[in-house]
Figure 1 (spheres, rainbow over the protein chains, first blue to last red):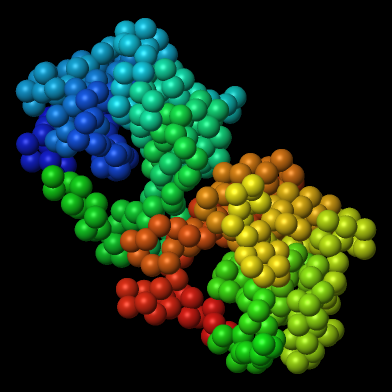
Figure 2: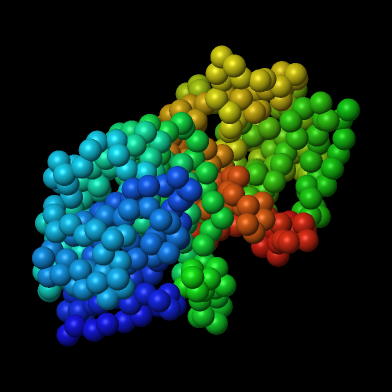
Length: 240
Length: 240
């Protein structure tokens, strides 16, 4: 079923979703609020954009040209509707493409920022994959792996351009190691905790292409307070 | 000047220190409270034990035989006095040895736990080293590197034996990568923050020899509250 929702607290932003597909989640909101946007940020790309929550939130924070890439045709069409409803056709360009070949459509070294909330789970022989193919592709590394994201980023980011990722803590070491392999130097991490006293369940990572070594571990981010409500910090992200 | 101090809030424990040397710090207290002690833990070794704060604190938590290894003669002698004042000669054995050859004095695969608060800083051409040679050796990887700690641990730990480390966040990726290289699988990390809103300045890491993959990022540890006092959690560590 296709529905139009408000993008949480972003009062002016609506998002078109389909209950049979993977719907946008908190992860994207946190990533869009984590990534470092500068006054001279001109070009941003979101890889595996889904129904485009990251481009939508970023559009409230920058005048940069934003591109969103989505391989799945049905999801791409929903994202188009979302962009159209919000009258963002100029600011956000959507591409129904495979991220593995997207570098052929753009100049190398031309993006200030690349973001991605990629599929979190590796494909293994015993993987329990989701019933719906759309959800499987969004959650499992079927069509897009962390290596794919890093490979495109190395090509398309400017020197010192920024890659912002959200991922799972289980893959921390692998992601940091691979970032270095692709010359994306890890610079900032925030560990996200569902609430005080619980283990981390999400990581926000920012790297800089050909950047200088020096990783900062930022203050932890708690999503809920003891009563189960959003913390002030997360609430403020939704109040933009 | 040689002084006898109480080991912070550990009312029964005294520690002999010399103001010209590197004195024990919060790091050791946090590590001794972080490491997983089991009811069947029989043998523990602390590498680069200094004036033996980690063995002393661990002695309040376990009946295991604890060994502390310190290469610097003057520091070793202070530690001996500390052990003697606390009448711990049976429970804590000190060795004035180099950790790089300590494996020759013990059976391989014989320790349940190895701990270390090693020197944090790499030696580089431009390293600013401390005036006092004792302090330099405690802070810089002159006589003991992270590779040395991991090499000994691989030899002396039992299968699934535990290595507990405290270190600096700048070296997180290197340490995790090297742990895997030495077959010490990273299992638990706690990031330590001086207070709310500040970046992490210390990491607590536990690995398991030949352990199964699966890294957990535990709740963050805040040292001070907003008023600059120790948080309840840290205060409780001192209240043992």
